[in-house]
Image 1 (cartoon, helix red, strand yellow):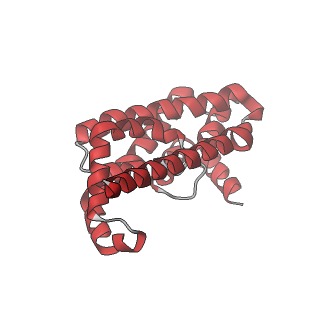
Image 2: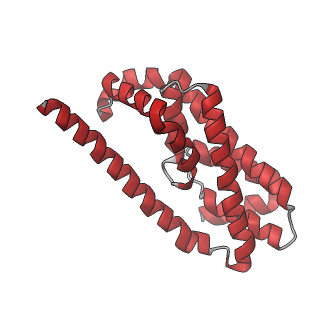
Length: 199
């Protein structure tokens, strides 16, 4: 089972394991990021790992992951869209809309997007495609990574042996929220296009 393998990796490799798993998870690998953080918090509760090194490993791992995603979007994102965008109906006009959205409010998505599975895997890449300035990206993305890490490590610590509630209750709620937010965003984009065509 994938989850058991991941938890064994955290137990065996500790801080390095947490760093590497979160870095890969943010990029898009099938890793239950919140579960890794909550389990790390549980290990702090058990006295097997120390709190501040855990938080440092979690923050650095997630920050590295989203920065790499941003870098990929900034360097090869435009090429990928020009090459394969037509297959998923992504046009140059839509990229312009994305750039405008990031300029106006998208940076806040970097801050809160970590809490939404699926969204956090794409938000950094999108910021790179939109050419969001690195300083703005770093401020919002790194703040998001820090608060997200603290939230779920703390949850694992305070839940103690009940840390799996993050899997059972909290993560499904976050998944549902992300689906709703993405659906509303798509409706908003489609609605704007329809109104423009009518005008």
